[in-house]
Length: 287
Ligand code: NDP
Image 1 (cartoon, rainbow, N blue to C red):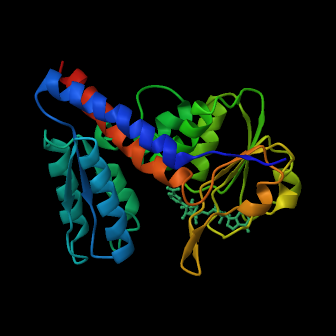
Image 2 (tube, rainbow, N blue to C red; image 1 turned 30 degrees about the vertical axis):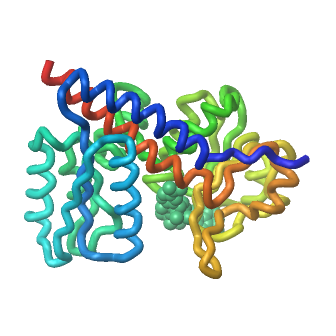
């Protein structure tokens, strides 16, 4: 079997075109465009590259992008104050705080401070709780939302099927498991303490890797015909590789996301979509 390649790059490009139209329609109806603000503490070059990429995506579809880049000496009170000012700013539809934060800035305190309606990457506990409950308006984290969008647009049947998610972080593994559960998949979450991980993975009709270890999922861990979603981004010899041994998996899976060009580009697009949605919800709230 040669797996179908789930081309996230092409899907993201198509979704950006759709969003361009939706942003233009929003502008002509409401007289302004939605905008994202990114708060990035310090000047980490990898983080700066990622933020520049986010900025370009927003500008590509006609939304605004602004960046706050406080020095690492910013205090917790100042950081929370900055986020509160952004919550109150009507020109800001969505807020992203780049993680990780320096040690003296507890992630939880900052995430708590983002207004749930503007929390377009779904890190505020209100959004996480609503995702858990599967009810009300909420933003799920962009990366797993992108993985789900790939499955949805590919028409993958999830109801009643076995899904195994390897990884249990709050931004990728856990929310992905919940999103799959809400689509009626039967979900198992694995982590570093899971016993006989290969056997559990082999049960998966849908196998999700969110581990952060290059080519960790080997061919023998994949059930023939499984659909594989690889969130991993690992740099090996200067090249991005996923958490799945892609070349070998191509022979066993029925469909797989490549790295690069799979789930990565979808994360950006989900941030765009969530920001437009946040702007619409904020207007609806105002009445
Ligand atoms: P974390 O390091 O927060 O979580 C990794 C998870 O993998 C943990 O739950 C850990 O288990 C589990 N794990 C580690 N080693 C093993 C093992 N030997 N066996 C089974 N499970 C193991 O990573 P993230 O969730 O933040 O990211 C995961 C990957 O996704 C990374 O490659 C990251 O770069 C990528 N990523 C991709 C994005 C995208 O846009 N595509 C965005 C964000 C992240 P335990 O909890 O027991 O420690």
